[in-house]
Length: 368
Image 1 (cartoon, helix red, strand yellow):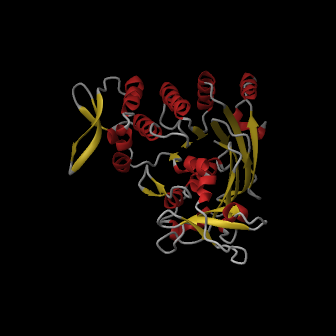
Image 2 (cartoon, one colour):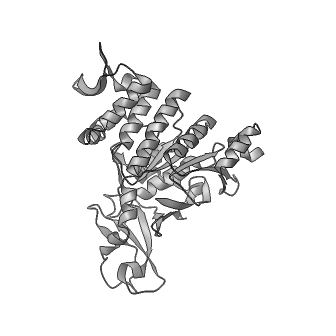
Image 3 (cartoon, one colour):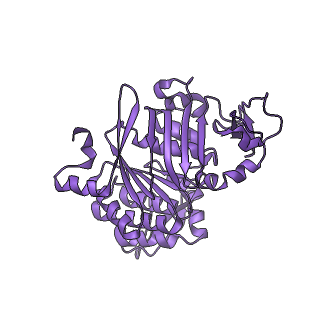
């Protein structure tokens, strides 16, 4: 589990520090406060362990650029990720885990393979961890196109041996966590989902969980979820008593719930990043969706990170987390637009209740 995160020079954030992260973490704040950037920071760091976004069938660095308006891929539009587009500064993402280990990732301004042999997300580690020779020198470890750990810009005056693969053993728990991280937003293509995700759902019969969710709230008459011929291929569909409905033709709320639940169900011991899950969900449906998500988090040892503008979602998650015995914390982010420094205020559960009893909304802490 991630216990704290430090982000430097990423998008609108010059620096942000968030401590004491829990099982379920909710980020609120004004538009442009940096909430989604925090999710993207974890997503970018996870590219060190697994550069591919299995849910979308793309490279993570390409996708995070495209999310931010880049009309191309990492190699041509990566500058949109740098604070003030100052690509000479280092983007740093530091994650401290419950194991006590801290992993410090650096996003380098370099082309992704095949132009270069190493992915741009590299890990900064003390040289004694890699070579056991002691000293204060830091070395940078990346992954080549075959997935092997390799040195990135080492200090050759001190480095006299090849990289020791035992580094992976040192950080096995942390890298395993990062390799499974998923980012859930409103940009999940159904075709990629059908080919990349649904197979894993069926392998462990997690489709039963998805079906239960759909029947409970969205399409009560659903009998099963199946593939049916469609055009030149097959489309994932809901089988109803008298017909079948392609997933892609469902309402936004039902489709989103199905995609999110299917993406989460196969995961274990990793992080789930959810951007504005209240979108397209009416209150009862939001309760059903979040109950399923948090139950999976409890059973599968998942850590949840959520951005939201919904006071209803905050109250729903707070109640469900208490019922399930999950630790939950609300963080209010406020970014100084001139400096890019983000102030983070942790809002305790009792504070949420007091604010609402006073008729105040935790989302408007900047004017309280």
